[in-house]
Image (cartoon, rainbow, N blue to C red; front, side, top):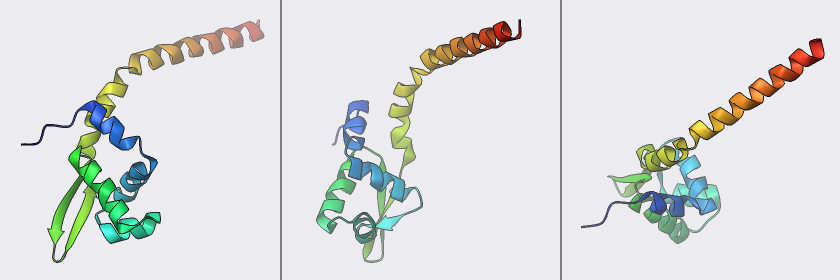
Length: 112
C-alpha cells in the first residue's frame, strides 16, 4: 500500500515549473496525455512522467475514457499547501494593518 503524500511531497511536486504549467492547463478540464504534451511542447513520455508525479501526490486524478486515459486537476491535493501558507496569514494581516495605520497617520499629518 502506498503511503499518503506529505506536504513536502506536494511542494516537491510543484517545485517543477512544467508540473505547475500542467496544473494550470488542467484547471480548464480533463485532458489526455497527448493534449498535455502538445499544449506544453513536451514529449508524451515527459508529460506522462510529470502527470504520474502529480497523481502520486494527489494533485491530479485520472480515469479511463474509451481507449484514452483522461487527467484532471484534483485541487483537494493542494489543501496541505494552503493550510501551511495559511499559517502566515496572521503575519501578513498584522503587517498590512500596520501599513494602513502608518498611511492614515501620514495622511492625518499632511492635513494638519
